[in-house]
Amino acid sequence: MTFHRAALVPALLCLFAVNSIAQTPAAAPPAVPADVSPLYVVTYVETKPTARDEAAALLKSYRSASRAAPGNLRSIVVQRPRRPGQFVVVAAWKDKAAWDAHMGSAGTKEFREKLNALRNAPADDRFHNALSVGPMEDAAGAVYGVTHVDVIPPQKDNAIVALKILGDANRAAAGNVRFEIVQQTNRPNHFTVFEIWRSREAFDANGMSAHQREFRDKLAGMAGALYDERLYETLN
Image 1 (cartoon, rainbow, N blue to C red):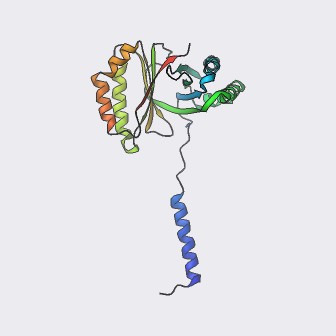
Image 2: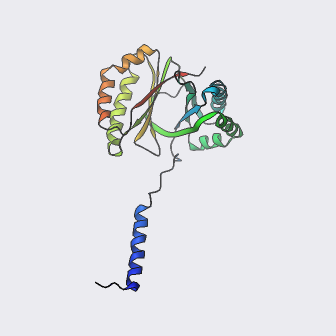
Image 3: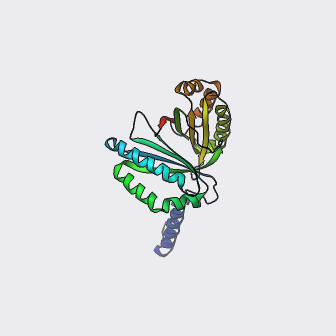
């Protein structure tokens, strides 16, 4: 079979163009859609072990400043007892505009610069919409939990149903102060669970409850990553 060079070149160019289009990834959704209100922001912070006290003081100051900022609905900082260089900032903002104004302020920029000098890893901001939440008011307890739940995309809707059932059951459980489930805005198959319990005994008892075991059984068939449950203490 004989190929003519003049006919072959356009065909190759066409094939290259098709392949280029096929390999071009779809545009990612914005991290923070403008219409999410309230906007839940969970920020993971990991500092050098030698800088944990300095980081704690810096985060306390940031927490106070955040609570005084326009549009802030809540700002909580917790610290991991076994890894005291690891912190989580759990905040809620009126909307994206309030968050943007906060991040653009001189005080927040200065805070991030100081934190960056102490870090083991960059601060990891994750943005969420409400999924199964309770009252917004501040609440205090003895045990704080932050759990990242990741399911495979085809199971997203099933996971939402299971998580809402879990949220209702845990808010009614003995010793629960807060049980909040929020959904990541740019990865809707990723969720964050934030919980507060009056004691470690109450947390452990709930972990052995029928509703908690039933949820974990369901999650086993949907999970896209390890169920990453971590316990913290409030930063006093």
